[in-house]
Image (cartoon, rainbow, N blue to C red):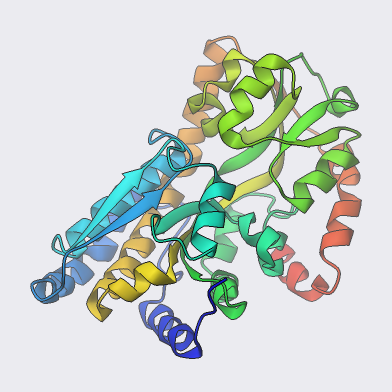
Length: 358
């Protein structure tokens, strides 16, 4: 694995601090108007420097379709980068998992591959690569509302989490945070409550938190690549899985698993990362463009996610999806207690800071 030099780490830390990556975004603002206002001044400044910048094309990997929350956020980020850079940076946005699953993409970029430059990943995805802080973001029922999440994402604590890969010598750096809605379980057979999940084979990614969560529910965690999940549900390899509502709908999972239980076990926190190889291709002006576009995309995402999720949920109900509400989540929270204890060991104070941001 490629080791990051101290010089590179200090350079990106300074750039992140100067740009104020996470301080300009609010969870309840209008996505297009506010984000455009936030970047207009930066766009004028960047355009003045763009003439001397080399032309660069960066490949952006997104596992979900472009009509999802994260897909729309990726498209907006692309627009902002290309506009702010005066066309010196082009984003080649590859969606719908054409470049592989999230784990495939991470394995590629963390091994120093140069075919993928940017990727949207789940905030907890780097957990399997040693990022313990990131694990806290995926612990069940940590963020009780979207406002709670954005309180963290816009706080002084958030850059510490984004910078964690650099601190560990991983060849990626975080640009911005977002979210894709609360995650819920969905199943092939009808369910009415938590007790119906016992004994089921539930798909998980290669993530210790999700393994512990599923085991706490009395089910069997079964690792399946996201790109293979549809067929796994169709053929009985797994009995269910979990995703945010928009991803559940856009990937046609209701066709094979038409039962959605709104347990909201975790918020679908996401981040966009860029490889050190790609970062090194950019001039200082272009690096600043990436950071400014990230701020705008984060704000766009904050204004988009909840409305989009509600719209898709109503469409699912109208199309006959069996949507099960969970007004009392006490039993779910109790089932998750052990996985929280196990994964906060040594990080109790930091985790409490997250909880207290509600």
